[in-house]
Image 1 (spheres, helix red, strand yellow):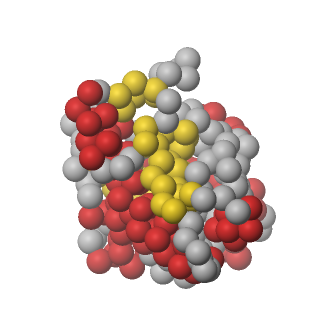
Image 2: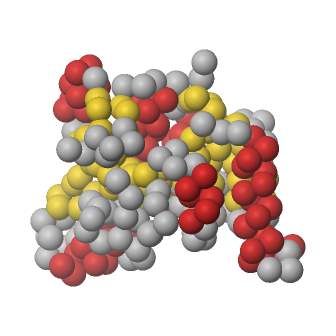
Length: 214
Ligand code: GRF
């Protein structure tokens, strides 16, 4: 049976688009957003995938607004929750309820440069490499167990924009690949923190220049 996911977005939705295009072992059941104007919602609409929005101004408090998103998610009973450019802190209680079943993609080689403006920070640091990471979500932002990464060189004369656009291309390859690997049980995160991957997956990762976290 396919692994049922929901995707949380707040904006452009290019990672959502990549996920929608690569549903091999998983299905996207619903796209949820804290913003009605999230451009990415149109990708879901175009494929007839239900969307649910809970904008802040439709509720008396942030608490109520978040509760609406959590309640909708619970109704859907997803196997995995995929954060794709979701720009709102998710409460610890909800994260614990879906422990090790919420994934996020972040545009840096975590643990380097968590949080905002990772591309600028990477260039300013003088690092030679940059990239993106798919990780499990824990209450501390961008700090959960790492699953896989893709990297690229930081070039001479690099700008934030040029680097962001190269990293984004990697994100679009990495995120669906990791979700398919988890959904297909070729990548398993054990409760003791061990990450197990099949030999076939390791081979594929090498071919695709993907690094599975140790
Ligand atoms: C991506 O860079 C993602 O890694 C980060 O937010 C950005 C979202 O882009 N978390 P998009 O909305 O998927 O185009």
